[in-house]
Amino acid sequence: MSERSTPQKRLIKDIFLKSKRPLSVAEALSVAREHLPKMGQATVYRIIKDFVEADFLRSVDLPGDCTRYERCQRPHHHFFHCQLCEKVYEVPGCAHGIKDLVPMGFIAEAHELVFYGRCRDCA
Image (cartoon, rainbow, N blue to C red; front, side):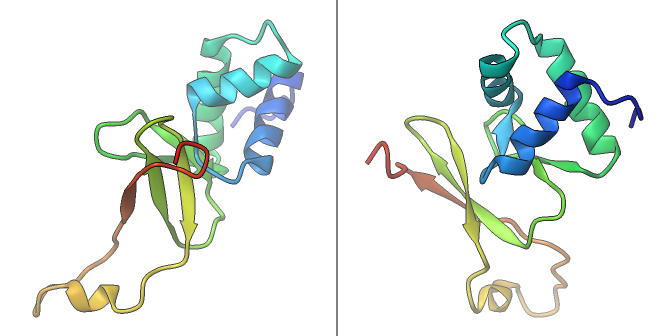
């Protein structure tokens, strides 16, 4: 990651530090433009790429959806994807017994769980 700290980079970092859910580039750009109206999409992509390389952000890839990003140092969690507003929310923790779903003789190294439906605002 570039060591140079710019107002744009500080703003994007702050947006992800304050966010309680994974954000797409478009969502991060929308929030950023509330503070820096001339912020460009390419700038946000570049900053996010730097943050991923620096292990500050990680990508969240849900089937059939754009890539979103969240801070790396988050405890294990799953996701809720609203099918109306398209926002993705963090679901804390992990269901008891989920490891029991792994077939006998198999070794699960990781798992992801995504709930689909309507969020509180869209319900």
